Image 1 (spheres, rainbow, N blue to C red):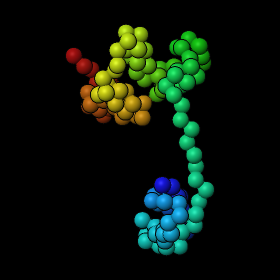
Image 2 (image 1 turned 180 degrees about the horizontal axis):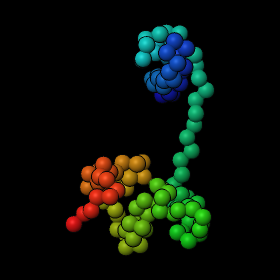
Image 3 (image 1 turned 45 degrees about the horizontal axis):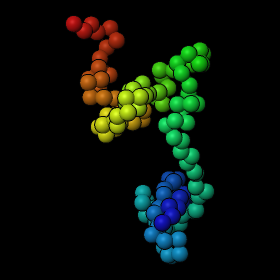
Length: 124
């Protein structure tokens, strides 16, 4: 079940199209403008790393003094993950989802309200 990428010279958009089998014939159409004049693009590839590898590569907070360890999104929730692992417990799925969302840049609900607040605002 391959995914092919195409470039549309009409609207200059790149799109990915899923095909049920590599041997099936299909006529690709641009989902944006409907043009059938698509050019096959060279697909990018992904390299996935395990959490262990990411932690080994990013190291401990003091390993890289010129970098801000806590601003690296890979380290969000790292302490929580390590604590659950040390206790031999599985982390709840909801917590795993929240950590992953934070790593991808989504703020937790309570912080979304603060995002628009003035930096000069005082909280009591």
